[in-house]
Length: 133
Image: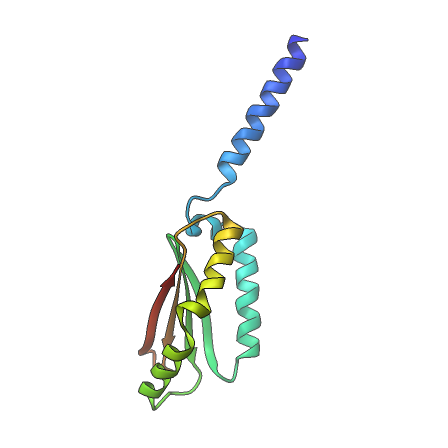
């Protein structure tokens, strides 16, 4: 009986330890796991293929609780002000909020932000905006 109780207690402690170790405290911790990094890399590769004529590079990174997407245009954008206006009109809190909510629900992490950075073909930054709920 003592052996069974000791085994049960050991199993419970092991399970508790796995649960405690498995929960990420930040988005950066969450995406540091190979499974999630590979999934994100795969998603970005798909975007790069789909939008190859528009962007020469699409990348992602995570710092603390901010997920950053960066886009580099394949061709130099001449009318940067028109592009900024278009991005401002389309990248709104209302448009991004559902993605933030999904990430928070899937990861169990609150206080998530998503940042979008757009670069011209020559590497100059065109647009940079961060969203949070």
